[in-house]
Image 1: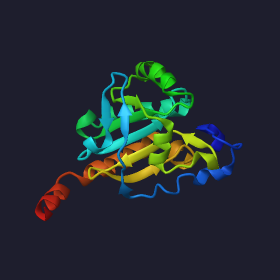
Image 2: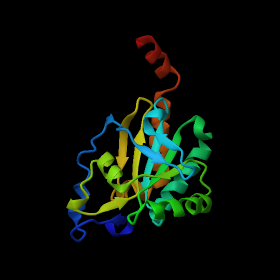
Image 3: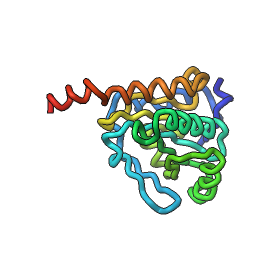
Image 4: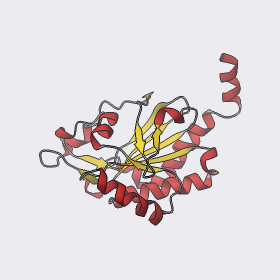
Length: 195
């Protein structure tokens, strides 16, 4: 149900109209550039991860659903052999300001035992990347995006996608396994012949 997800509402009161905020994020489509700043000051550019399967979570550090999603991503990452199989990445878009996100990220990572990078992105940049118009209604978190080795967004699940999040762990695993298998064995040989 919608009330199970955390959201950031900008403008009018929350309504079911928020479900269609992300109509512009059709899949598959090329993943736009995104810059995520880690607390160390290092910048992670999404374009530099091309060639890897990427699971990207837009999150609020104070959101229990986001925390659960991050923990699931870490569990699947551990089961599949770590960064060799796919890359997990989180970016906080806390509503107050980037200072709050920066302060809370270390605790978020520690509390959940995360081994993948979690940084922060300006909310406006994240909304633009997602194709969201927050003036039309609330934005629900987490926002989970799956990107293939070619840099194409292949699956997208906003916080309102209760069907996906009801069996979150199995669903994350299925999507990741499917994308990882696309670049192995016969698929790689076929790509090499075409190139």
